[in-house]
Every structure is written in C-alpha cells, then in structure tokens.
Length: 269
Image (cartoon, rainbow, N blue to C red; front, top):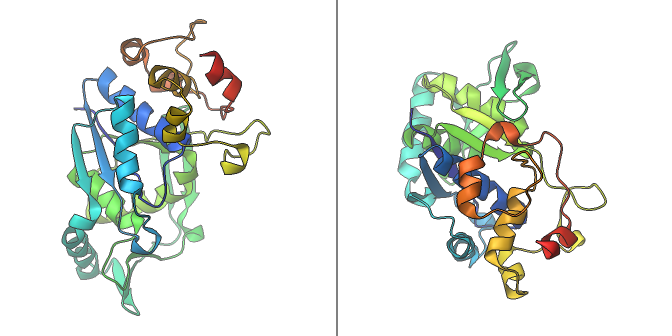
C-alpha cells in the first residue's frame, strides 16, 4: 500500500505554528515512506472565509520547503459531495431536514479504532452521537462528509491530525461504513501547549510562521523546532537537517503527552 497523507487547512485565518507542525509531520511521514503528500483546501464554510488566508497557507509551505505532490480545493468539488449525499438518501441512511441532509446515526453500537499515536484503542458509543448534518441547506457539504469522501477518493492511507479531531472520528468511521469503504489509519497528535500548560493560543504571543520569518528566524531553525514539538527520534541530538528528519521519522516516536511551546528553545536552535 502506498502511503498517501494530506493536510486539509481551512482558509479561515493565517495558520498558526500548530497547524504548520501537523503539515510538517505529514510531510516527514510521507517522505520517509516514499509516499505522497497532498494539500487540500477545505473552503466549503463560506461564512468563515478570510481573504488572503489560502495564499498564506501556500506561502508558509513553500518557504519552509514542505512541497506538495498534489493539491485540491473542495469548493471545486461540490457536485461530488452532493452525489454522495444522494447515495445515502437513496439507501435510507440519511434524511432531509429543512433543506439540509442529516446522517442517521445507528443506535446501540460501538465505534472504535486503534490510534497510531500511543497504539491505543479508542471507543465511542453511538448513543452519544446525534444525527449530524452532512449537506447544508446552501448545497455545500459539512466538514464530515467532504472530509470522508475526499479521503476515500484520494486514496488517503493515514490521517495524521491533532487530537481535537478525536471526537469527530466516530462520525467519519460511521460514514465509511455507510458507503462500504475501508477507513484510513488514524493518528491523533497531542496539541501543543503554552508555557502555562493551557492550549496554545494568541494570548501566549504565538504567531504564524510568516510572523516568525519577518522576525528573522531561519526556516531551518523553525523546521527543527517544529519537529521536536512532540517527536523524539531517540538519543540526545537536537539539531538536524530535513534529510536527517525524513530518514529518522516514525510515528511510534511521537509522544502521547502534549509538547510545550518554548520560544527560548527556538531562539537557541
């Protein structure tokens, strides 16, 4: 099986360093396994669209040298999602609700998967999941439908993302089952924390890679710093070039504890 991974940023703002680290880990995993790295712009939430955000996403990746093999834009694929929503309606696995389409969540089932980060089994009962919207009344898909349809059609083998998406994964697995598709392997990385051990945010003074570039940080330092935010290749080596990182990168070496963003460490690197 060829490794195919993706990042799926939404152009709802300039990506912060946590999003960029996720992109970098996907890239390292793809290159280590001689696979493909895909960028998919998830721009179907038109209400939250921010002008210039998509350009910034590409600019960050290009400057860092995180080169994609394929790229897609969900707003250009809306008819594909509508067609798949229709399939679920025809199978009586979804229903219309005031112009939107909702997925029927089956009752009294358990949804589980083994997560690659920590190699742990995660389970949810379907009784705690309500019927969820897959196609909005404006004709655009929700994240859940578009994400699953695209991951299947693009042959995504591994979904590597932040652990804030764990609660959405049961919905995605239910959609895979409904379509009769094999789900990808899931790997949910712990989120980056600020020095006060709370989730990293703007109040910690954290900026985007573009801000850090403007402040004079070298891209090689930023790549090295991001790699060590949650990944430990073994030994005590802390300065590596990108080829060394690609050679050494393995998801089993990603820590299950949340890493701390320490600007002093970045300064040292």
